Image 1 (cartoon, rainbow, N blue to C red):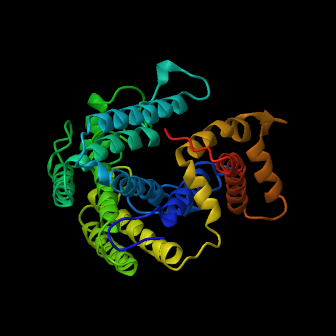
Image 2 (image 1 turned 45 degrees about the vertical axis):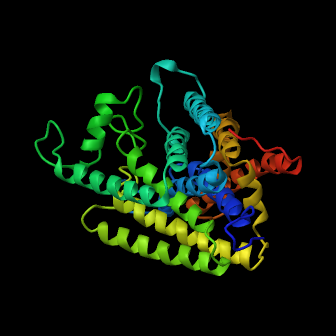
Image 3 (image 1 turned 60 degrees about the horizontal axis):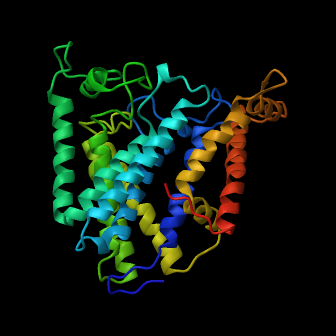
Length: 366
């Protein structure tokens, strides 16, 4: 399990949290019918927070925790080889993201250079190198500076061409920078939720995970670590909630308040899972999460590929997912529930190859 000298064995809670986060990501990315989705299983159109909005920052938080646990012993050794591995891994994740963006028709003239995997690649690259060269106080100071500067930039600098400060979709400083400097297609035409400027606060999300990971390495008792994760997480989320009053929580802009609220949630979730799984020894129900978590990015990539069959291939005049939702709806079921059940069915389909890889002890590390 764990000792209190600072050495930490593999955390089942972190593996399960990673896996269930990926499963949730697949579920919300692939509803049975895009027209029938419960509101909380959609991203907010602009300001606000839904269950779906929590998923991406939770995964970036987990990336930060993993960096701290994996690289903590590599700070005081020659880093040249580690830099090379970090850069290569980042490039591989980015390249896979580009491959997914080209599916299914590989139209190079309409290519998007941003996305979930692209952001993970960039944030991992920056944060891994940052971790190897700084201590927690420097990381915390940088995180605070980025959040404050981002807040001031978006709320005090007028959007060029408008003469006033704006935080509307496609009409804000972040969108303007993307319009000027972001190559290729943007997700929303005139703006992109994984654009240039919003990547900076996304880096902070991963820094918060790094800070949590370093807390886990301190010579504290397991109960103390769990309590600190819960307490700091609650305080961080509360601070983000009140910051939201003047700088709205917004995933598309990845606002500073959004960083604090979601990082606070992720910290509390890790603290609770750590207590239940690693301290109390609870194992019931965590196996699917551990299996998904063992090949998290591979499972995410495979879902996009399998979606070509389960969501895009026509059969009998429509796609399989639409047929399934229509059949369930005809029994009197709420179409939104039918859509969610099909999404869960698709998660189960993706679990099969994840299980086979896990059973054969094959772990695909991008």
